[in-house]
Amino acid sequence: MTRRMAFVDGQEGTTGLRIRDVLAGRDDIEVLRIDPDKRKDPAERARLLNAADVAFLCLPDAAAREAAALVTNPKTCLIDASTAHRTSPDWVFGLPELAPDQRARIRASTRIANPGCHSTAFILLVRPLVDAGLLPASHPVTATSITGYSGGGRKMIEQYEQSGDPVLTAPRPYALTLAHKHLPEMTMHAGLTVPPAFLPVVSNYYKGLAVTVPLHLSAFAPGTTARDVHAAIERRYAGERFVRVQALDDPDTLARGFDVQASNDTNVVDLFVFGNASQALLIGRLDNLGKGASGAAVQAMNVHFGLDEGLGLESRVPALSHAH
Image (cartoon, rainbow, N blue to C red; front, top):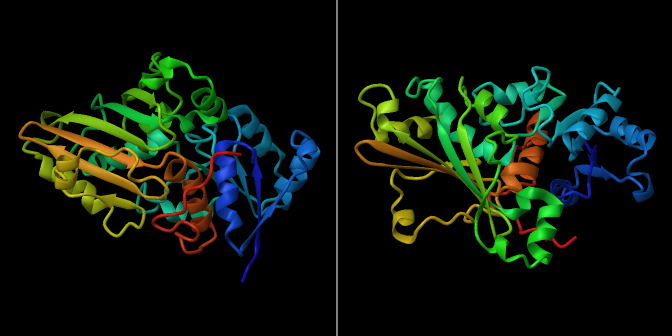
């Protein structure tokens, strides 16, 4: 068995901690550790980055760019969890389900940009419709996303869990300047030519995310029904291990109500289509710390190395503590 070296640069952040926890359960990966006193030492970071077969950059954008510049070993594969490289032509978007040739691109590249949590659900819903010619690339799409507060990182987690601020008990829309950092990748990788109008909402629970895309059927090719929309999405992801397309107008959801957290502790994206004679409602649900962050990064690593894509990412993984 080949044993590979992995380094998590930014291992104390929410995504870094979870990647480290997932890799700790694998005997084919040795996780390199940095001395806490040297976490900001460029020379020590460079040594570990270049010693690794794969390095995960769990850093702010500017720091991720700086880390990437430290890598001189051509064999080191970088998987960047920041937004710094998600639309860069020199980096491959690390969403294996994006297109039929995406896995081959991930295998061939040593520069992989991990998708964002909101954008993963949005892209998986919209891209098949654009590719099928049902939805024009120029259509002004709108989307809303509700997410748990862990998506905001350590500071937001502390704010929700320690501050006692009554304002935090209700859902809070944010990114009201209409310039959310995921918009460029949402636009590019969904195949759109017009950025969507996107409203994210953070709520008072730890994790779980659902992106909703409402569409009038008049926006589609003439004669398109909600059933056609559902069929196009279902065809695209037939046989995919980590994308589950639920039944049209899923009866369980209609009977019980929508559970935003039902995909938590998995690497699965659940996709839904609800519709009537004139409208369709698309919903993508995932664990924002799993398939929306760390799970996606480990999945991309598995694809890159030609391993079982689900290694360490069973359909339901144990809940990982966030009390670090």
